[in-house]
Length: 196
Ligand SMILES: [Fe+2]
Ligand SMILES: [Fe+2]
Image 1 (cartoon, helix red, strand yellow):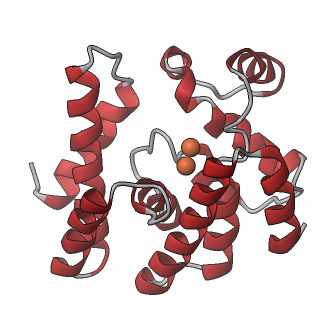
Image 2 (image 1 turned 180 degrees about the vertical axis):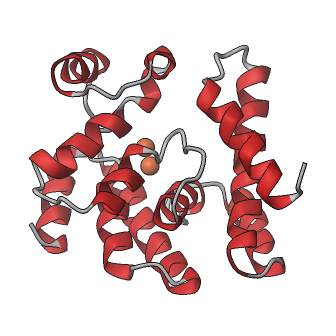
């Protein structure tokens, strides 16, 4: 499938708001890919497909995972809101027939992130948080300011650190389970940016 065909398909299976968000992530991912020297075409495809499983029901996600996905971590199953990522990554291959590892990993890890995540993974993760169609404008501006004030990939890493800080804060405020991956990624980002 090319991007136009993927967009047409997504318009049918996603809610209007999710589709708007998807187009926003695609645009933002393309901008970030140009800025940081990632593959622009891959960023466009990964941006479009990152939430391709988002509108599946909780039970459908769980049974899809039980049947088709072997590398799921036990603690990932605790928050069903993150499950559309492994399912989406599987659909990238099986339904959309895209076999590129970078695209698949960018979709796979866009909800949780992971230690040593690659450039395209970082770009999709961040684009998902700050795209301009549906995300909070003040948060977007705060992240863009971090990118402007810090050269190269360090800016990207500091922006990600800010996102993880916010995620952990919001989870603790609501007494929600924090996946160990989230803590590990936060610590990794601290190490590679501030150096603790
Ligand atoms: Fe998502
Ligand atoms: Fe998203």
